[in-house]
Length: 428
Image (cartoon, rainbow, N blue to C red):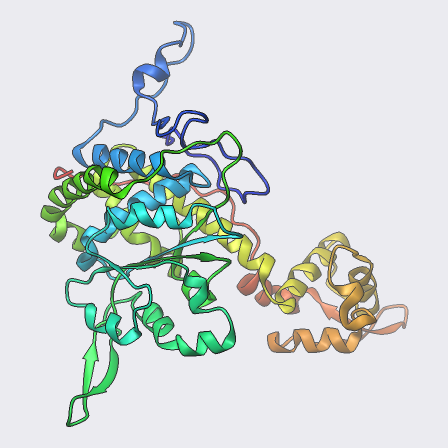
């Protein structure tokens, strides 16, 4: 069944998402419609609407956590709100997971709600450890077999200039290594200079302006915040007043999840993505499967939509050589996908595209020499070919690019068959 609020994830500049709090009504959350709301106006001659999955203790708790987050922060999409909710819940089962996903809360400018989201997350995660001004050594020593949840605000200041980034290289190494179990850091300590192992495995939330280093973004569930529009209202967050309610939700999450620890360790959820994206999202999807209700489908929809969006971001922001691969594929397609394409013809089309960087590449446009250098790392080069009419020219073959296209800029996958989701667990 489709998640009542699931919509395709889209970049903020491509589509306006409805607010998760009602405009002009602070703190009110639209929520998921009930089955009665869905079927109330259905005429007798219309097909019946499929009933929503039965709610469970776990799904009701996640719904409540979702409402509390939406009360104070407007997320960029319903999928992003689902992802934050599941990430918070997953922190309470950290020791059950093989990977510790990061939550990267990024925005293009100030006043986009990053710190406010981190405030709410702080009061609902497992054992929060705020690392502002903390040294890497102090953080190393704070991570135990039952790790805290690391919270880093203004993370962009840690990795800004080259000088600052070098100073915080240990922290970056910790955040990278701590994404997976059994990646300890080694330090020499004590009067005898003995080598000691310090665990690094811990979930972490990082908020900052602009993208964080690629090595961190690649290990993160990425939430791209933006400023609220005029009329979009949320409740003001006040620590003294609001933490009691948030702590109550947190405590109920612990009561629900703690007995499911062994079950969570044995879960191998069906994932809609592969490789590192699957590693990062698996704890969130596992929590959704433990909860049941509408959450298993909602979690996978969020995973698929948000990872696809980040893949598009990576391609948009990638180096010139990957951009060149994608543009060459478009040239071949425009020419009818010939087996051979003359270098001169390829360069002519690339340099005529005013929306691309090629007309102004190295001031004079892309040349045969420049093309050869950009394709060198992929093992692709032009060679001479003689055509049936006796004409000879340097050409690229389409077959040369097939492997590089598949590896670095694959075509969007066709819509997958619906996943067979596991039945809700009896412990949910």
